[in-house]
Image 1 (tube, rainbow, N blue to C red):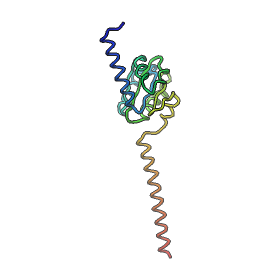
Image 2: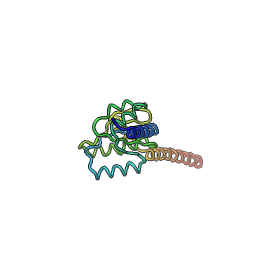
Image 3: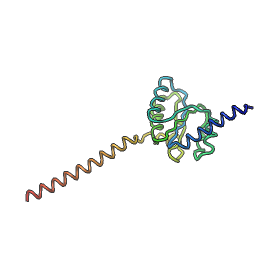
Image 4: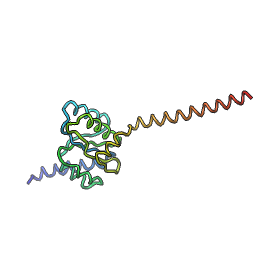
Length: 167
């Protein structure tokens, strides 16, 4: 039986993890075995730069933290080694970065499942989210599309002006 001090520490870890999960727009559970140190370091740097918090937790801590949230269905993914990536701002960043490393490292590093907004997803769902471009790319595509429409409108108006001048 653990001492009261150890028990309180564990309860604090679970409470902190639950607060992080509830404050995140997305989260991804991965099986991290099979990734070498160099790739792990590189992956962690990319995650940090994208504003994603990545950490290894005991499955029991994740299980207790998820049990009291709307993401309790993810407890079925908690077997073997587990790391959790949480993003408070970008819904696709964690999935995109971890999916890239899962494809590059076929030795056991794989996605178990996760959530985006309020939706719990399996590994295939997270892979689908990973294929969505980042917010910045989507905004630039939108601006490019709008710019093309405005340009076409200007060309049409110029042609109408030229026709009236010709008459």
